[in-house]
Length: 266
Image (tube, rainbow, N blue to C red; front, side):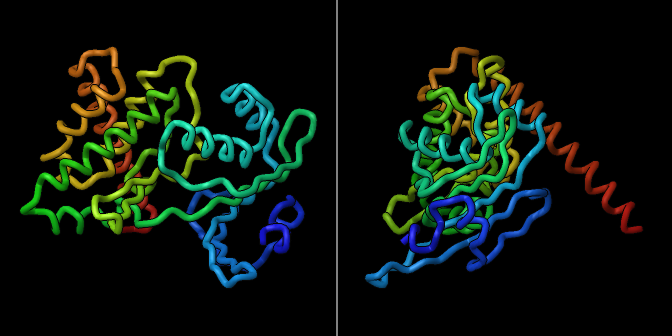
């Protein structure tokens, strides 16, 4: 099916114009498209096509430094998806990838990945909490699975770098709630300062989750995380570092809001 649609080559992927573009600020030279295809038997599949234009020499060299090899933006995420799945993390399936490489930098590249079920915690978790007000054990169980997901990523040596509630999907049809991690483009394996990178992941999650969940379940999350991730540093140090990072993120968000209001004359 992908070969028929020419989605197995760089030229074919960049020529593909069927689907819905997903726009958001900061994409720059990237294009994200939701694609729906049907095979010869009438089965329908939803997938996401990411297309990257050529980037600069500095970005290519930085990627080479971070990942230890010459690769493209699409190639990094393709490998990251497979690495996450090998670590037992539920995520999308990498379906196709291709790139055009120059001597020192990446030119055009593309990635095609499957859709994950459910919806982002950013959109659905408030409703989940409301429906389980009288069954806190359900929320606690899901909290444990969330902690286990993050711990599995970190124990495998990786960090996400964009671990917000918008990038964790919850699917409830299975009866117990399954979690999926998406948007692995910036995931990498830090060689140094691992504590700092893991703290950043945890702070991003805490910052973006509902305040009620943080107040009632964050400590339970950390307890499971510390046990599963085999963290060496004392819990107090983790808590202080996470809270300091969350405070910095809130301050930055407030400064941006004030600057935006001034720009519109409000």
